[in-house]
Length: 331
Image 1 (cartoon, rainbow, N blue to C red):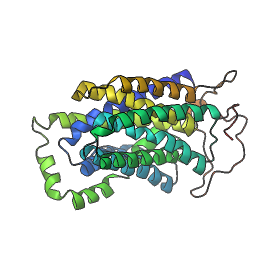
Image 2 (cartoon, rainbow, N blue to C red):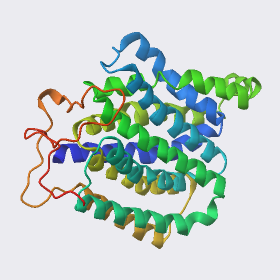
Image 3 (tube, rainbow, N blue to C red):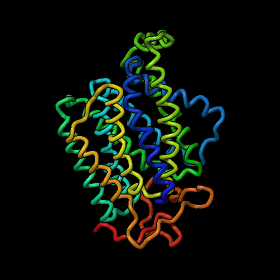
Image 4 (cartoon, rainbow, N blue to C red):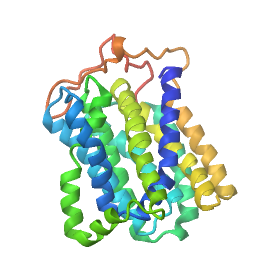
């Protein structure tokens, strides 16, 4: 991965880390399932009017929307509404990184190098230490719901890689077309029209202003900017190279929640956070003596074969493939 793209990955980390306390603010006013429908509807309307649909099969677009939109945020918002603190949510959700690598290895036949396995393993152990240390602040149900969100994120990450959209930002925006209708129907059935109507009727009040600011941040910064950069990286590099950066999000998330809600981290959490950073650096660092090839000219991603169903063929990478590495794959 080039230094510029590593910097872009870190920008995504900050956007998504701050996103957790902002989401908590939005959930103070909006019901969780309706909030998922609302955040994506705000993106879907201008997308349908002004953004060309990415040149990928509809089935792949639906898979991205299912993973990154419906499953990830549906379960995450339900978990946070059920009592998951924003800082702890940012931590547990990073189980998406190992989920992504495993799903990519099974679905896309991507090889996991020893260096990546070691780095991810170290980071996962550090995350487990933080989770165990803070488990007393969250009941079991919010944790399970957040883990389901992490699984949805991992599925969505691999679906993005599989889609190989020519324009990652267009894919990010068109992914938002998938969740609004099913999530609105689910919200009407579970949360009820009365609760939805009350949240909309009082949206212009002073009490709702922090929640509206949180919603706008989620839509414009976390989704448009964050996912626009993330999908570009996933379309350019193997999932196992990009996914470990998501493990840095809880470091920012815990600090942002500390500043916003006085969720004070202790020395154990801070120490484990440093280990997470180290694990991500090990997993993403190129092997000594090799060079990471730059992205293709014009930012075009490396396209997977156009197959809606079935695994990617198992032959080795092309000599000019920018995802090719000299490191020995994990046996």
